[in-house]
Length: 590
Image 1 (cartoon, rainbow, N blue to C red):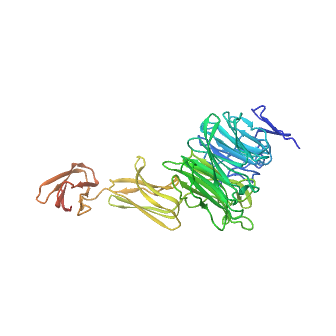
Image 2 (tube, rainbow, N blue to C red):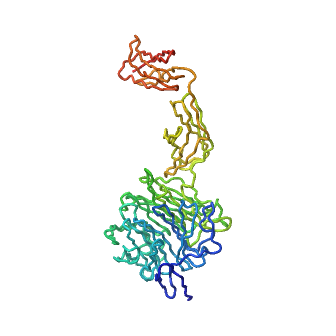
Image 3 (tube, rainbow, N blue to C red):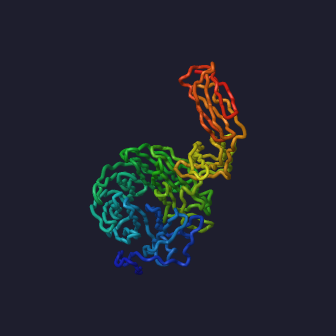
């Protein structure tokens, strides 16, 4: 076997061997075909040889680890970073030297904001903190696979699948993976552990096959819960059988937040899989009946990933999956699509599918779709996938906030007296919660003046209107803030300002409503600065109320009159403004 030697810069002796193979951290040396990032959000312009995984730090920086040998001349695991929400990406200065296939790569972030790149080479498992440089190998052993999570207190937990005897063991680390303690045997009849650490409460959820049948994917899927009881220490709570039967179930994953769990899994043979889910509202103690999340009979749905989000005033779960038509020949945007769905906390109704991919995804046994929560970018969520760009496979990135959920075709304003009516039209809508109307005048800030509900998802032409009434004379600008169900928003500005002119004449309008009970409104116009009186009289000429008695500037005014304490009958209101006098009648009916 050929020896592989890599140079580690700044870390002198972090070298681990598997036989004659030496695994090291090394500086990244760019290859000649190192990529410039394009507007299509391609991270690398070639197909990686293995998987990829991403995470976001609290400062907003994104990190994605990729099993790729073409971005550098000396590395097999590289990291790319973005400081602008994934618009552009840069190669991180170091990576891992082994230039073969990595069966698993997983990026995780602890509650202390440390990030770790965990990966498997052969039967060895490693942890690397790319920012601190800490690099360590998990216990040497014949491991088939593993999963690892981090707690809010900064501890790491690993569950590893022992290949020879179908046992799953677990360890904890309070040192960022340098040392592992508190070994525990989870089961001696299990395989393929999958972990998820809850968004609140440090509850760890484990899923695995067990007992293992001859065809592993037909085995029962079990669920277990653990609680962190000390530094690097877990205690189990309960084990249950959660997906029974001998149907083919190749993928499964639980996501958990605020005591609510969703278990997603595929069901059916390759070529005709659907994606199902079960929900728990009591921290995984019991689960509701199974429901289909993605089940188009004409496509194969698989390669999914899921996470949770905590938005402004809302929270829920995000879900991406690959819809494969199993066509003959090259995939197209009509045959192969990466979709996104979400479900609000407390609900079991998923949003309609939203298309993510502009470059069709493709199947490979060496990698799968990956989702990345972006909690420090307004509860955004991103997806990574390998897509086909005119015959060239690339690693793509896209995020929910980049999807404009509404196509606005017009936005206009009409002025009538001191009222501004806004009108706008949409051609299509996707997950449109509605529109907030905002107004600004001169150097003042934006003020929210109203909200108009949207139509959710629609492919029909939709027309909206909102009237901003009772404005003073002046110049105004308007914008509408379109908000989708996930909290993502987009602003649309009115093309020009709106002028509410000064009245040319004095005028007193008829009250509205009329008849009324018990309140009504009275509009009047003042053409020049003068002292103004607005007086209410009863039918025999007695003054009931002096509504206005002051100097007023030119403009249009609205006064509310409350007659709750008066009896039914005819009343009069009189406007005196300089030489202008006008009297009108109104009727109170109780």
